[in-house]
Length: 276
Length: 334
Image (cartoon, rainbow over all chains, first blue to last red; front, top):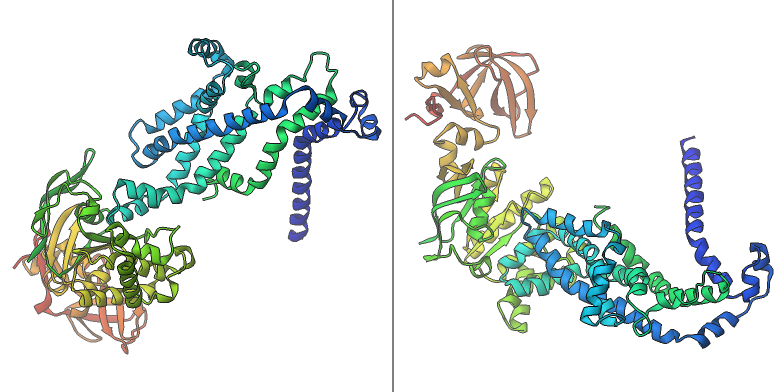
């Protein structure tokens, strides 16, 4: 009896999980479907969309009309650049908070996190003005800096929780074994923290790649990444469903592939500490 | 020669004074055990010697030199931690070689010393494994190996056996004692287990609330405890501590008598009592006897072949020559 119940429970859980996954994935699936349709077919009823003929025209037009590669490289530079810069700043910060905590460490962490609760648009005006004065509007440098800053709280928090899991006794053992500060960081802490740093970097690349508020507001032509590339196909009239979908697929494909291959690392990094 | 000296060393954590100023001298080649209940400051004292904690006041002298301000890396002490604290990303070989690598020794010399240590500790076949692939006992051996390769001035052990099961603990206890005889290097060993202290130490330091209650050889402490705390802490089962008229009869506030110094008779004796729970260990039998004269039951040791059933009325007679007398402050009366 108990077994039958648990099997039924399992089935129900599976159905709910699949239903949730399908709901979440459906928009992406639909974008993929629409991207292979002619512009006229893309606005038909769902059944009409599915039964109409398939074509690569939208991709050809998008490729023809705009420079996909330029946007792609901008995205890569902005995502990777902001991540590297963020890690460079966050590792020492998280390190000191995890291993030499003071009375204010908790408060500082909360304060950092609280900046994420602020609507980004609230600081758009000052940042926009700053960018103009510094002459970094519509530049990749500017985007790298601003994306690094907005994701920094998350990077610091992730690294902090990860470092906290490293037992202090191991660091003390290294000290007793004759390791100075440099050797301790280089041979003991960093190798042990690499999985955590890697997960954090992966997540940050994804966040920076998908970021649309700052990338759209602070770029025009030169530094525009793939988010701007997608946006250029949206129009209030909604006449370019197929092309918009094709552009979207081209923009999200690289990060989806990356996410797919690194999902194990990513899940491990995100759930680290939760299961212990 | 005095190898490690603590001079008026004290430690405070914020407002809490965990160790009031104390003095301690450890001779070259001695096996010293710090023992006491949890929270008595024994681990803190060890960490002060190691340099992992800074002293609040006083001086730590190692080999005649003031080491108070010297970082742990340069005190030439090796430490074995309770959690083993092995480097999980390194093989056993690299773990053991790590202190040598830090000391800047050549590859060949590193290898030679690692192989030697592995030989001593029966780790040769595990050298290429990671700590995660080893059992608790093997991990503890690796931790000891990492300590011995660099030939330190002294070894510090922080409750190294408490994560092991009982059988393994007895085995490792012997191995560490054996190692001490072979290396003849000073060892400072922290434990809350008085059996470990009794079996391994040349000198035991009994601590309570950061204060040294008594220092002496295991048998000195066992035979002449200076106060009630030491009397009750050293020895298993515990010494029977009795107050009231019986103590007053011996001009003391409290008297103590060890379980083996009480004889049992079924017809006559000083104290009448009733047999309660019996613990058969095979070689010995311990009876817990309730006497109307005392509030707490007495523990009495008898031979392994003595058998008295629950509720049997018996008589106990203490061996007066082995009676310990304490005053109202808990100090020994002579």
